[in-house]
Image 1 (cartoon, rainbow, N blue to C red):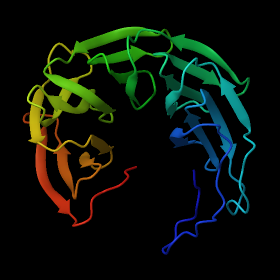
Image 2 (image 1 turned 90 degrees about the vertical axis):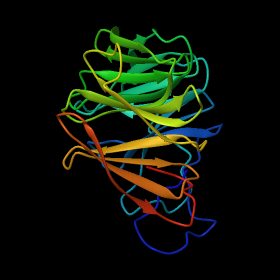
Image 3 (image 1 turned 60 degrees about the horizontal axis):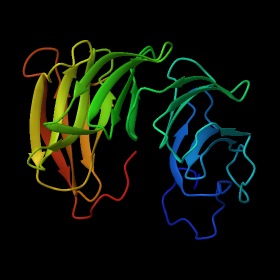
Image 4 (image 1 turned 135 degrees about the vertical axis):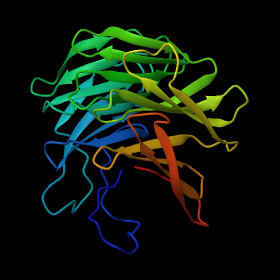
Length: 258
């Protein structure tokens, strides 16, 4: 993968890369506490921690600061704990979530409650709760410290793909597909997943919808790979909870989102 400075213009094909994995890189996340530390995970079953030198890369980086092995199959997701430094979560295709203490380079806990591939992970503001979506069509809210499932929803009418905690509102938003194969969003109460507060169909396109939430402005942005638009919503504390505002349109399809 590439790490390059914010600047306009084309990146040269021979620009230095981080290339230490032995398989495709599936996810990368910057450390929220140390700006030059990045975690990556790969099809090679490893999680690696990289330290980008000041001033950026001058040559290809192949040696990681840490190489973490604990999953038996490829690793699809990594997430830094939002309030505790050196704690990293990883989710593998072995259906397990590992919690790593990077000071010792070992997993300190394994969460083994999923029955299929984990599609997405999201922390609440203080990191006391972890929400996951899974290929088994279930949405779960977990307590990371104990690994207990606090709430669980069977999403047969809303096949969930992505989930995000909505700041300090005690609500979750998921994106997925309805039984009629239309793209859909759903809003949930984190303390009661028996049924969504609201469900809203978006369109009939096939690309995954990615939700991005800005807690300072209570704004939700919905974008999909291959789409030419980004939708804006405002999240409210009272019904209807979700208010559509407008959308940005572009003639060029979106290739990546972050």
